[in-house]
Image (cartoon, rainbow, N blue to C red; front, side, top):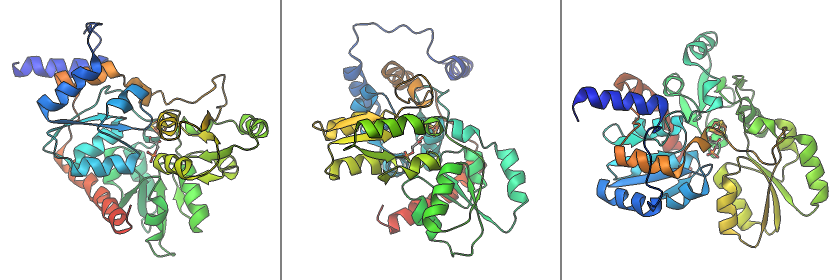
Length: 336
Ligand code: 13P
Ligand code: SF4
């Protein structure tokens, strides 16, 4: 393909997706994806919030920390990131020489969007004596303004690695920040951001559900609001929640996070019952509209055409890489 056609194709796929391509309905997508993995030396990394078919075809399924660690150590030539944009961007930051593609370029994140770099830069300038700890659910621009990145599975350990009197700005998730303040006794300054999925769980409906299922354990992701977390028997990252359901001896769980994780929970413990915690709207469960933009068809197409691709300015990449490296280093030392 000549360069002009290639640029036009890239723009088209980034803005509209693979709208004009009709797949042969008899195509076995699972087999086709396996063939492309081999042909292109590609690895498929998927977050637990992806649809079950994508999880089943992935080489690695994990939480944000696990995915970043896998992205760092992969030998593949192409990383196919079945997750949202900031996750694929993190993989690119760690692997400048590799091609990183994402099934749908529009798979963003409300939490990441709640923290625009120009506004955050001003906020940071008002607090020059604070260091910046940022949740990985943020853009490369925010990462570049941060001292260290955290995920929901290492935030506590990383915050505790700083002296007690260290002043800290925590961005962008106010709920995770408030939870970490509570468990560490810190008083971090919180950016006012939140995840659209985790902030709409209904306290009233969950309370009623707990009454109807008195033996069920209630488990929640720390992106949930404080009144919800107060009800929880266990709070943890998606990997933490999954492990808890495998190791704990209850038979029933009410799960307050995105519903995609239930697929792995049911696979790991088929004899147990998992009930998605209800949100504050008319739906019975809680899907992330960004994560669920990715489909098996788009995954296949992005591997076949190697589009849409994550690219990044080198200066920004290097600035964003420093706090990610620091996170990976501390996590390694902590055995995570
Ligand atoms: P973890 O992957 O760290 O559990 O975070 C969940 C999430 O919201 C990712 O977008
Ligand atoms: Fe972002 Fe929330 Fe979706 Fe995770 S679940 S990608 S934090 S909007």
